[in-house]
Length: 533
Image (cartoon, rainbow, N blue to C red; front, side, top):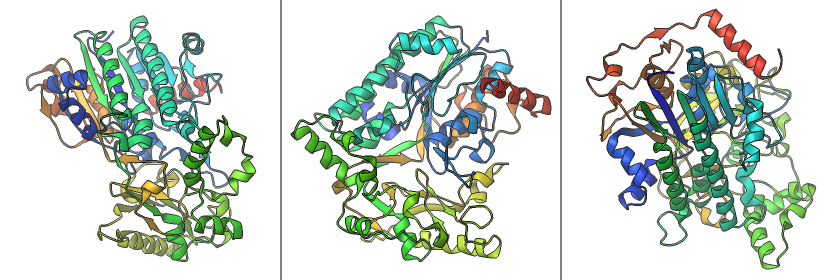
């Protein structure tokens, strides 16, 4: 056992903009206790601010160019788009470093940790898990134990339940039920296992803020407040089960903000003559009339409830649903034989349809590729809000301008960050929509600034810090626990969080080169976890 223990409580999408308001109103006593007794500040997410890249950069200490996860989908295989998971991760994570140092570790519900790998302790996979029948825990027997206790696995597709006839109240209750079961399991694991490091992630903040951000501040029906209240109670319970040697970290992968405008970026690319849509008179007519899957879904939900037909949306044949145009990405809508660049789904970036790399590529590498990137980036930077004149994008980059490492080649060709309140859409009869209240769907979206808080022995009290990045979390924890920091890491040790004369402040940060022997051992552990050896 290490003389220091660390508990990391991850809150997906948590933002100080919301938390501080609720704290000031007296709703969140556990958060208030941590803020008064610890050091806190914003935590800069990755670009773009996404759940997969944010959490994976946090637990590895490196940028996506080194760990290979840019979003929920991988585009490095030209023949198919793959869902990213633990197998996609190419960098060592904090549990690898701590386990190699002889420390006991436990991880619960960290996104993209399916399939779980052997660790010096236990791992329960999170977002991206196929379901409760999968091997979602290490040791394997732990999964059966959790299910027997009523644990609810955060399975693929859970976030979209609101689209299949579930009311807001029903959706909230389902989310809160999962939150409660995850908290119960986490507390049981805290009590029943010896651990030096424990990390638990709750994603319910992200889910509720996406769909019900507009509820914030309501006198009645503030489902966001209720979600944070429940988490506040969970934090209080966890604090009751840690000793005086434990440092507690609160972190989030990104922040959140409201959605007010939408950019239909593939429509924009069409108007530039860079993208060709597959012609369908029915699809074009439906789109011009404003009939899209996202706009029809709330109407169908209300109809299903009004006429008391449960599962109405589930009963509609998939082929019929696919005939209705989508505002999100559908590759089948694009004629790749005549398209130079397009926006793939679930990403904040553009993919060039490159010859020799992509099956139907038409853009030649070299001068044509470089000229196209320059042209598109210039055009994106020129986009303005039609009424205010404000820029749509805060940053637009070539991928090698913001990422570095052996896996930059797997990133999208152009990466961008939208201004707050802007959301991306796929196709529409317009490039920009400023009336999203009519669209339904999301009312909240990711923002760059997440949360960071440290509380415990040798941590400054009631202090705010600036400039922390998601990649700083792992090196800071490694140093605090007396382990060397890998020279490969992009993050830094946040020395400002420590009391001036404390042991971790006095102790020099030790950097270690990752030798080939360490890398080989890491690869062997992963192969064993995947059942390949």
